[in-house]
View 1 (cartoon, rainbow, N blue to C red):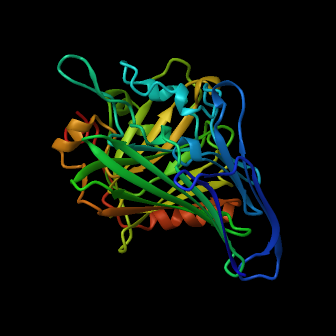
View 2 (view 1 turned 90 degrees about the vertical axis):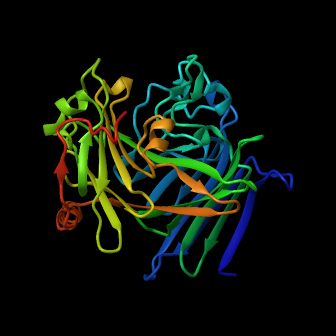
Length: 388
């Protein structure tokens, strides 16, 4: 049998496997090489990580730690000497029960933030928003990252070498919304690549709105002082006056600077004739790279975020493709950047990742991005349509 499937969690069917393990040597596509792969699921115990489920997926080249308990985020990943993670001051991963999303500061989300890849949304995904009485309406970055999967499955195809982990999450509130995130992470035996494919469906009989942003966060040792990012863009603007002061160095990671403010730059990304855009993050020796590919029709906006704090306090940069800018929800709705789904309508999003492990591959990819014909318009100050 070339295709095998395992259900690890199904709330409706009463299925739950606290521990799961699969190890086998599989043929790498287009070669005769047998590559040992290993997938295991386990549950953490103790501290704020108590009862967090982790799935480690190792395709023989890349190792990925996925968190079904935390919105199917990716805690960290590794390919050879490339470590995709950051040094968050949070000792995570944090169980959602310890994250005070609706803390009246609006910033409770930050108490659980230490993943390499985390989704922001679905009802809202930007800055916290308060009503005229000062009460919190929408918390920072929304709820989806702190909601657990109600269904989790794993499959392999021995003919194609395809390995897929799938999770389903519902974000709902009586009288307001019922949205389902169907998320799959796919990779191939012995590959340096993986794909995230997410489908958001409105399960309500009424139209429903959503926002979505992917926060892809990389810190030391891969992203460190001297690293830089290559982003093709039609237009770019700093989000704040502080970011405007850093405009000449927007694409570079500077030294650790305790007490400094974060800076964010907003983009309308450039793309090829098919709408495909590609972003490259390089290490400071420029012999390793992380490539993110997405389609501009699905993700019309992109943000680059830099936290320049000391490494112990969260030195990190973020690549953030999105359907809207991460401002408060009302402002984004005024600007027409909120997505509306009809009853039972779905929208699918794909992110393609590749890890480059030599100088030649890094230079080739950078040149591909440079060759895209883009306007490269740079606003010197925050753009009023992009920043409230």
